[in-house]
Image 1: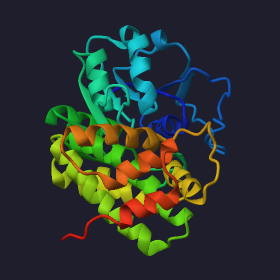
Image 2 (image 1 turned 90 degrees about the vertical axis):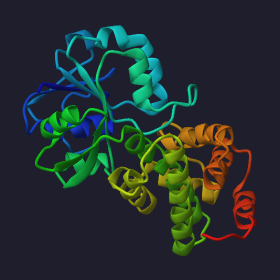
Image 3 (image 1 turned 90 degrees about the horizontal axis):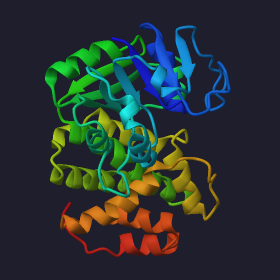
Image 4 (image 1 turned 180 degrees about the horizontal axis):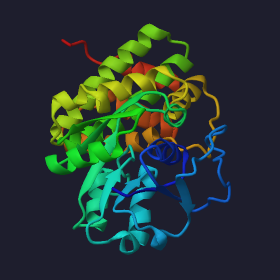
Length: 314
């Protein structure tokens, strides 16, 4: 199965490095002038099996992994859907987020732009640097078609990437999106000096929120308890490799954060804050993160909101 990756950021580049162990890989990016070493992955050189291009029309692969930021995916597909559409071509979403404009996940955006193409999701606990260095990583590969999931599982598994297949696309996708929101809250707790016990409380209650919203949107609860939900949540809430966690730390400290760094959880929190009331759901952690990210509340107000909620059973 020939493979191309759309998006030459850190994660897309890391996937290209890992998949090169299986055969030739094409890596597309708007700017690939950096040559064989992506500055977003310092110290990692692209293997000879990876070719780079900035020409979508030149890509002949039958399987395309879309490793673009969730908030840019819809615009990219609207502009380039016709160039990507080919008979027999399938797509794998690697984005983690909920689109602010449509309040939809990446697979829905892909299906809208490419209605006849099979779409799957690749997600789970992973950092680009770990994958690129060949460190062992386990991910979820979800497709509504069991046959497609099996084929992709074999095609995309590598010596350091172990893929577990699922047919719960909604659960896999929402787990990956919502955990970023909770990672910001966990980072804020640490940044504000509240300690690890407070972080544990945020992670636990945040996971309950993730499960509540995801199951209301058609996901299976057991999927949220797997790699794409709980596994990814644990990773991003406990490591400073996570941009979302570092962003939360900055919010907790009242410090500035690198404006050029993509923080998927901030936009997703805003999307969740819009979605939850429409579905009759309470999402206090996500709503608080949305307020912090938009500057509508400060950390002291956020703490007051969460700590003064009514006492109830777990």
